Image 1: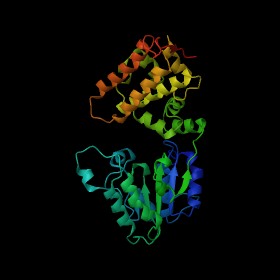
Image 2 (image 1 turned 135 degrees about the vertical axis):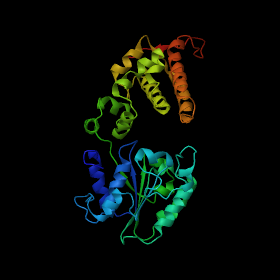
Image 3 (image 1 turned 90 degrees about the vertical axis):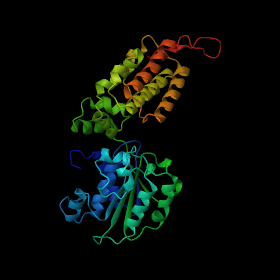
Image 4 (image 1 turned 180 degrees about the vertical axis):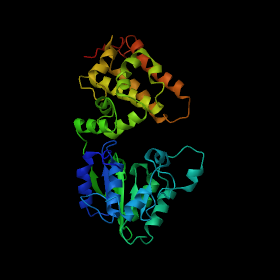
Length: 354
């Protein structure tokens, strides 16, 4: 990763990670804050022959092998669904399930047991370059219970000079037996100023708006930008939803539409009970206040519908029709809130946004 692309908030955890002597580190942060980048930087530095100032030199034979993704003492486990987005093919230091790469089936979001077994076999071989070996598992949540249990013995008794790096956005989602065998390396959420500055350096316009849309997670905001979603487009979502203008989101991937609606529902719920919005600015939410937004009961019901939609967001249905259905469902809240039964014999009240 170039110096320009390197997130500055990873500098301190990188130095802490290099100072740790544990054979297994759990790199974690809420959401997407650079866990993968930090794990790769640690792996490169551990394998580098001439590290300096806490970073790999980038010039030695080991660094060149890492650049070529052919270092014999480095192994990475990724779900098939993440390989393309991270720029890794099935042949790049990846000993995964060979059948998966040749299959026409949808790429898996899980790390398969066969891939882990291959990694364990690799870990037990003698180091090709006479030094340490490094195994990266990203994200560790992608291991199901069977796969995670198969890793326990290696975590407990690593062969030779094996060092392992596991990444996670939700460490509590891992098996306690996995967590207890790793030393934790947390990443603190950067300030809004630091996150916006980094995004601007990546060529992201309206960085403040996208950073808010991503809940302060700078790399998640960058992913929004790379999906073609601008800060201006994000700010227009509340009004588009209220009016039922599906065309405003028709070019977005269905998972992004579900996410935007879910975050809008969250913010409207917060405002309805007197709390602050998180993902949309007051200016963006103001149009949705005319004439009023649905009350808490209607918003909770909408939230439940969106949770159901999220479970099926990757279904191969017609995207445009799916977006239109989601937007029509959302717009119906404003049309029916005044007449929907409240369960007490009256009409469901509406709450104006302030």
